[in-house]
Image 1 (cartoon, rainbow, N blue to C red):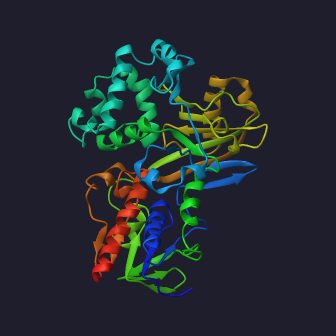
Image 2: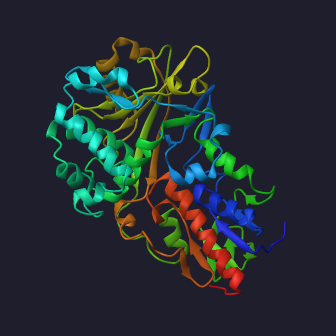
Image 3: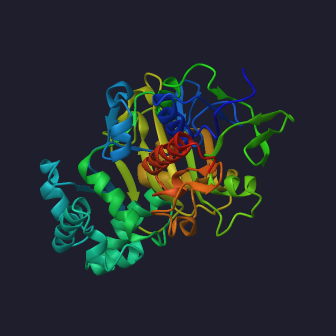
Length: 421
């Protein structure tokens, strides 16, 4: 491989792959450098004893606009969740469904103790306003917190604590719901216009599809970058690569380090997910389970093999459990406490579940503080140096894809103009 490429992209996560995809589509050669042994960044799937284990619990929203534009959904063979959730409250599960897409659950949803009839009407209003990009306006501005937005809509404390906090807290890994309202508007609109789904081949299939569109040899694995010198990239091995432009497609902390700056703000939002092998599914159907009781370590749970049967070998079920308190200590004690709560939910059958793995992802999402003021900020950091990543947009999978395309657009415009900017 040539030691020189017109564009070097550091990081083969979704942002870097989307950036490379756009470059290649428009006829510009690029090399993607990835420190690990596989492309995808945080969006990866491992295979353990016949089970598909995503790197932490993740879902795919078909209503994401950039994802719908870029990806081949048919090839991903997406399998959808039911539009709603089973909420654990007062010792049993209660069904909350989208009445527009699952009208058969209307009566059970209305009769559930998860909020009042008025709260259910407010959820429909929230849906309408998110789709019409009016949620933030109604809530008093895009920089209001998610919790302030929910309060402005008049949701009761019961609805906020039993459904909205565990649901949005799991989505944003932020139980305080301090995420800016504009991100809630974006994600709620995506929920409303499409499905929550899983690719049949696991979330890693999203990254694999992007990588497959690049020419063979475009991605160099196990190629960690030590530092930058202008538009020269020095690898940890000592190899030097030169380019007309360099794109930092790493997480926000690694990008700051490569720029020679200390990472600013709080640490990234962490996720902790435990995977269990069960003989039978404790809940039938593709449901997301929410802990609405505000007690115990569990935030959300799901039988992944009920959503996409390929996640488990024949005759087995794959259960994922994500913690509400992402800062809780790990180890055997954590597993025992989680099992105790699962036993309360599903009975003694939990004792026979085999623990497969615990994923503790320290940078699962960028810190809330890193998202402030990112909208409209140029991907160009200085002449010849650009950036992209989920933290540059909405902190979502879709934001990663969009930021990659925006970075590619700007690099290509600068190269076309003959400027090394």
